[in-house]
Image 1 (cartoon, rainbow, N blue to C red):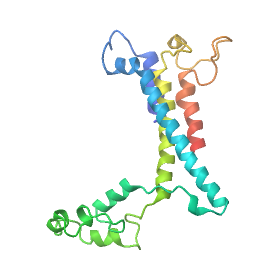
Image 2 (cartoon, rainbow, N blue to C red):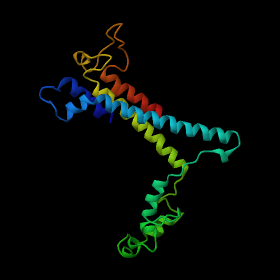
Image 3 (cartoon, one colour):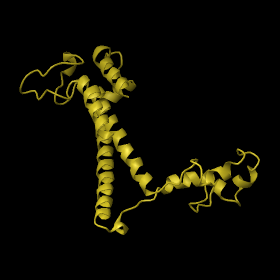
Image 4 (cartoon, rainbow, N blue to C red):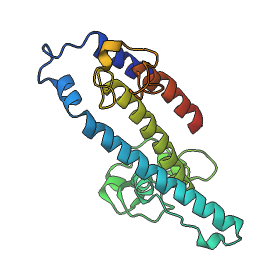
Length: 206
């Protein structure tokens, strides 16, 4: 992802011609870059505050010796998907987990031999039972991915110019701070955004 958006930023500075790309997909993306960036920012903030809040709350409840006060959210949709493929431990009566359903009865000779037995055995790793911990981890990873994407998309879409520095394209892909009054130092040039800042974010998310 980092390499793709870094080269996208190079393209916008070196090869992009507004007159040749009038009203096409690239031009529309640049015209709506504020909306794209703000939506990604909103998603990242929402995921960050809610996921971290749940983690902190649950850790504090465990530390205080009151685990029953944890906020444990079951991943209902993911459990439903597993049930539809034959896992019966969640209690859903749907598709392959419904012994009276048409998919179960009509497809007994179609499904892989031993499939239903395999997904319902506790001794193998096929369709592990998922719960609140998986819900939290899933959203923590989603936070890292959305924040990484936000940094990369902003770096590429702002490569030609931003509100802080409208004439950025005239300075090239990578440039030093061009003096006081511009607010230009780290994370303003496209190189900083797409490579340096994103690499730091990825390392911090580990």
